[in-house]
Length: 186
Image 1 (cartoon, rainbow, N blue to C red):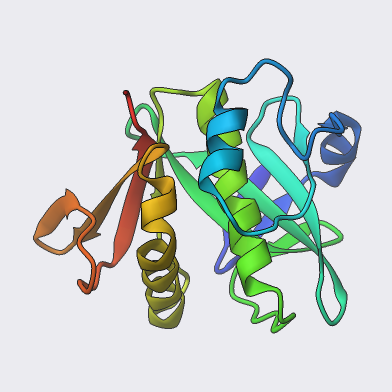
Image 2 (image 1 turned 30 degrees about the horizontal axis):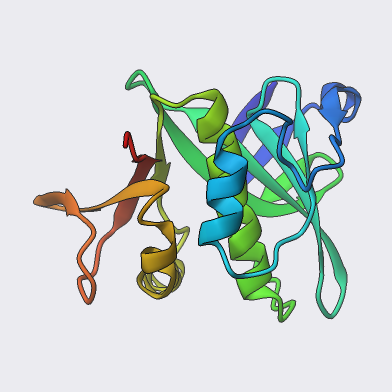
């Protein structure tokens, strides 16, 4: 059970804890053909992560200056096949998506999220992931990360930029209000 309360997602943690598994393969299930493509195309280190049985909720621990439990949720939108990516700090039964962790491990956290996206899309290959920062600064951060790593992700993902009147393949140097990520079909 979950509900949105401003910038906090509340989850029934009793169900959450019992459904997580750790496959021992840095978050990748054996036999997923994306594993080699992910490792070949991603240079940044990432944290190991755990996933619930539905493959919709992922957890990992950020170990920068302090230890912070992070959660990624793929929340289905009313449009079939589109899921909103929710990333935040997990504390008891809440996910705070507005918090600034300042844990000095941003690249490792974002690299982990990208691997989680690939993991999710390996189970839902026809899905698309809607990504929108909780602030203009976060959207800018996502744009910078996409620009920096896009050459490494070209074989994996199609990334589209969305703005008020624009829906196009991501263009460097352009500001977008959100992004849509799907698997390359080649």
